[in-house]
Image (cartoon, rainbow, N blue to C red; front, side, top):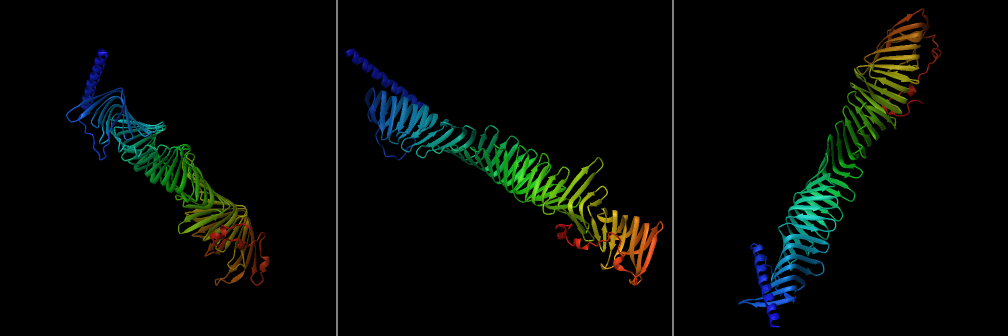
Length: 611
């Protein structure tokens, strides 16, 4: 029995000696670090259980040596360990240390220094702080059980089921569910990685607030840089502010702020948004990029530019992979010398083909052409436009004048060859032309810049000053944007009248009228030429009527009056004194004065021109 008692005393002494050694070693490992004091009212650390308890009394304090299944508590804090040394109200614990507060907080460590009066704990070695489903791993942790504030400075990893967060230093406000991370921060989620210098993290909401330079990598191919904002990890949404920048492969974007919705895989650039890609530039007040559909939405002062063309629109959608865009507000497509404006434009950048609708205005500044219509098909590579809807109108500037042409459909395009580029223009149906010194109607029209010739088909009628020209087809030649020649082909008929009572008439198989400074200078009639001409004296009084039939004739004009007539090949002429002339009978076959159809304004040709 005495031997057994001595053995127990020996074990107790060795345990006490071991506790002292561990205490001094632990104290040495702390490197003289000071435990922060606070103003929490002191309460006692109570020993609840231990396999062995030994008391050592000193001059000023009592030391309790606790060995085996040690359990203690202070207020709502419960502690357990393999062994401990309790000096006054302070505790030094070793081996499988556990701190428990309520049901949600557990701290595990290899060893512990606990100051009971300030409720401050220093945990060392394989530290794990578990708060609900959050776990913080570190090698050393300073934790105040009263304020529930934990501090580390040797690196820590915070994890839950989906996210891992590492930082070199940090402060964990357990009661507030907030952690302030500092230095070498790294967060890894299911589909992102985050690098930062300073960060606040709400453990309950899983909300990271950026407090300094931050880089986020999305799916390995997209990066966002910012210096402020937040990341809602629970909902996979984030707002990046302060010098926000987005990069994906060869795409780069900047904005006042960037909003990321990971659930919908959508990035929104807010405020002065700029997105660049090789050879492309997009700007708007807001740009939304849908990563799933590879679609970009520009809203507010939208601007898109590539190597070929520029687009302006308040709102537009750009299909990135297909390189197509659709605008939803007043828009301008610029590809000099061609300019297209419309309420909406649907355009394929790859093919250079588009459709414009709503108050369309197309311009070719190199040829001074403008087309106004409701709808248009457009191919800018060949300057092609097909205009229709609401009687499209062509405007061709001619020095101080303009030629206006309207029809049901207008088509214009360029025909390029090795030597030059030709502008081709076609109009159909019910074509109307208005110019200050010329008006015309026909069913269809063709124009080529090769010969600067208008070809009019389908019952064409031309009016110039007091003259009317009709034929099966008509050719109008321009020189320096002025009418140089009118050629009437098949059933050519010219009427001239200053009072619409007496009519000078010229008829033939073909008639060619030559103009100088907008007035007829001469006229050649060939093929069964016929004329009825009223002769004037020097005082402009009518003398009579010349009725002539011949193979061909030449008429010369001055001040819009015939000054000379030449007849060819056995002319037959009859002169009727004015007093004896039967005016109503002096009309050639096919006579038809069509002045009621004559357009008197641009508005007239935009109505149905042919009755």
